[in-house]
Amino acid sequence: MKILIKNTTIITLNKSRMLLKDSNIVIEDQLISYIGDKVLPDSDYDRVIDGSNRVIMPGYINAHTHFYSSFAKGIGGIASSESFMEVLENMWWKLDKGLRLEDTYYSALTAIMDGIKNGVTTFIDHHASPYAVTNSLPEIAKAVERMGVKACLCYETSDRDGVDIKDAGILENFSFIENNKNPNIIGLIGLHASFTLSDKTLEEIVAKNTNNYGYHIHVSEDKADELDANKKYKTSVVERLHKYGIVNKRSILAHCVNISEKDRQIIKDNDGMIVHNPESNLNNAVGISDVLSQVNDGILVGIGTDAMTNKMGNEMRIALWLQHLKHKNPSCGFMEIASLLLENNAKIANRLWNTDKFGVIKEGNYADIIMLDYDPITPLNEDNIMGHIVFGIAEANVVTTISNGKILWHNNQFEDFIDQHQINKHSRELAKKVWERI
Ligand SMILES: [Zn+2]
Image (cartoon, rainbow, N blue to C red; front, top):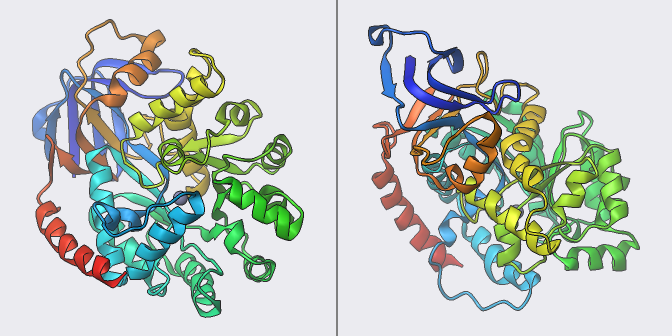
């Protein structure tokens, strides 16, 4: 399939050449094969897209999410929660126990469709389904393949549901990583959080991880995680994980809301990656993470949504306003926070996939591309691109999403191979049963 997008404005996010106007992009075999202003005949291409009055950017990467949360929309009968721990107990640890393999598959399909509509082409997911652990990751991988996106998957190992489920979780992670054949999909070793993992379990996982796979874990999301580590192990969460070698350059530490300066130094010294999830932190009332200090310390910090949304531009804006509020300064952190989404998420993906093809529109890179309905009403030039992105493009409608060189969403509609309403209908039937089970 050869695709031509013509007469368009390209925000490449390539620092040496950020903006191209009245330009064309050619996509072939999952990659960008040409960008420039050469006149190209339509007849040479299988699909030709007119990109005039629109803006092209690299597809978004959601660096921390939970597909399995899809069936929580509109759920009733959940006791109101007074704390983060009660949110887990009353809501997420009930919902995830209701999931069977087919629910996991449909949760993933619907979450990915929502991502595609909003321009997300790469997802870093963290899965839980304690009563259907075995084969849950291959089910999600099937959904990722069917939708045509990229994803990094893991199963959240935990001691919270007993030894058998813990054992199944460990096995699921290793077995998925070692059997997965699709280069668009990778795996990490999933861990829930310090407060649900005993020393014995951490020792067991680390001993088994002789190939040094990276980890994906919730870290210091709420103060309760720190209190637990302090009480049981006389240490901070980051120090505890560091002791096991879990803080390393292949590991994602989601949240890090309540970490100390010393913890930041450990993460920096070991090149760990933090993923900030501002909307989720607000919703769970766990605090405002000091992302600016993390970035200024030289830590690679990306941005995810923790399944609250797939609107990455809005998530970035919320992250920025929160830093303004935290530091009581309405102009702090503009470039640093915009970079979480526009630069650092690609660095994270490049590191995890062991490539350099994410995040920049240039020849030879992955053809993961979005087209946004943005016809600037003020001059757009090399020097003010970030201002246009944060105050305009971040909220613009995604009209086209191309992933792995394939059109998934165009002119605000899914391509024929994605039967959205059929999938939604079956998903509603499954969700009803899940709700009845929990
Ligand atoms: Zn999470």
